[in-house]
Length: 88
Image 1 (cartoon, helix red, strand yellow):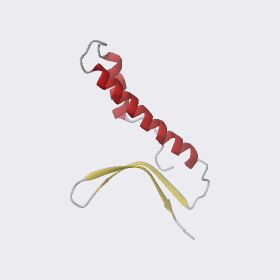
Image 2: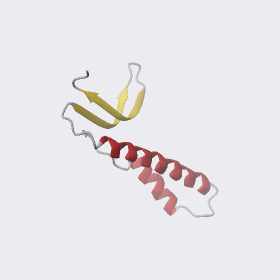
Image 3: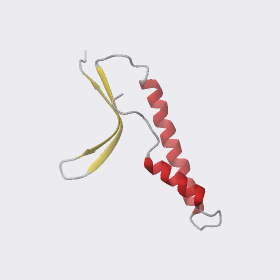
Image 4: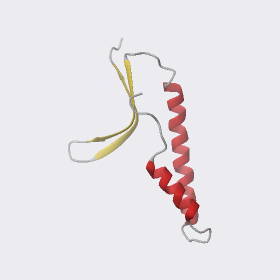
């Protein structure tokens, strides 16, 4: 892997907010839902990561968490990109 899988700063921030905010805060349930969704997405990435780690071939380059820009200044994020040096 060129870049390893780690919990993003965004997930860490929403988890910290969830721990610190009062249970009586009117937005608490929305914050908890964001935490659940974020953690579920991270667990999915980790599951894919677990399978990709089984690839032990120097012809494969595996990138995680790429943020790329398009021609018109737009940005998008890719969880995983697998580049193969030789395809048959």
